[in-house]
Image 1 (cartoon, rainbow, N blue to C red):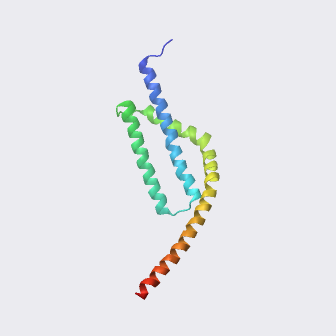
Image 2: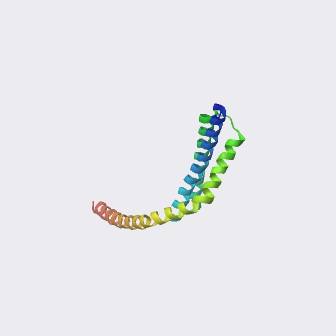
Image 3: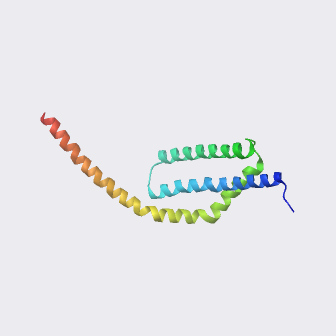
Amino acid sequence: MRISAAIGAEAMFFLASVLEGVGLVLVYDIFRIIRRVIKHGNIWIGMEDIFYWLFCTVSVFLLLYRENDGMMRAFSFLGIMFGIAIYYFLFSRFVIKIGVLVLTPFSKIGKKILFFFRKVLKKVYKTIRMGLCKL
């Protein structure tokens, strides 16, 4: 039996919606990994969240525009939520643990490099300041 072209197109649109949901949560997990590796305050977290929601809005709009001529349909949002649930319950924990495990050593090295450059720049600043005072 052959599936009609219309049903096949709808199935592909649903699959695209599921993959969109997986991608949205994956992007948020990247933000979560960065938040665990690099500690920062509420203002920065708020800015990240605004950026994330703008990204989600544009991403879902482009999906609907490209795949469904801009029409909002309930099953596309159900597909997105299904993709979010699949990724969150099956993969999210492991992705975050592995991401934090991989990036933590780089964070420590980065902190040492920043400390070194601050120290060097402080000496350069004092030298320039002393030189300007002698003029």
